[in-house]
Image (cartoon, rainbow, N blue to C red):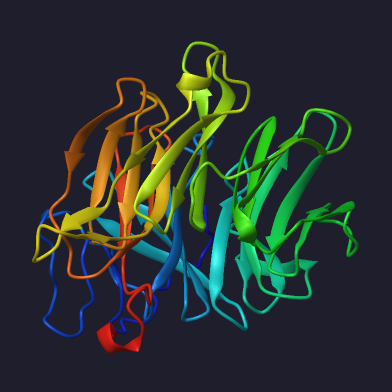
Length: 348
């Protein structure tokens, strides 16, 4: 699939998938999961598995060493490094094209690129006035484009063949998180704003604007589907306060919307709790259950319909920054690395 580009890449110690930093106290893998090797040289921002349109499973990771990497995940679970691309700044988000031949990358260098995996060439396809926090591919019957959300308080839609955006929408604040499951897009900004867009018209249209159901800054959002109709109906929102919200866009009953506590530990005294940020949320592609990953170094699986916790992992040495299910739902990946939640004192 990748032509002759099978060269591995640097083996510098940093964050691992399914393990902790290779510096400090050494590898820490309490779940005994398979580690992706070689790991990136700095903390990972995001991981994404390939879409179901290609037969093999690939994993893309963007990290703070400015590099986007690709591995092939074999049926044994072992990983093979395939290729990589470089930005001029840390990579904050990645997204797959629906046909699995291209990857889109967003960076602190204020640009987004389209990476053709067959030719192993990357070209710039978007530009903002500040770092780009989110990027998603939109495939509509009427148009195809990428959606980029930036700290410059804009949401832009790009035809990859043009240097100018198809549309620019002003956001009330900086974009902190976003998700797309056609025909819905959800964007979360600073100031606890949530914006919901419809994508099934001739162009994206704002459908609803609301205040976050959570009291503190949100960090991640993930759209979920109606399991019977297989259409997006709501989203899960995670915040820095160790809490998640399950929110339906058009709830039949207001009680269908709820929040729950997660990623919290009892402190040394019973009078307080250690509360950690929810860094990532991913829904299982078949069962509709969800995984949350937090700065406490744990991931948990939840059944939102039964409102119950299914399982919690052992604690890693460092925070879990990103998580994802593969297209078939039989592989769960997570990225471990320092997220600066405790400033430079805890960096090692």
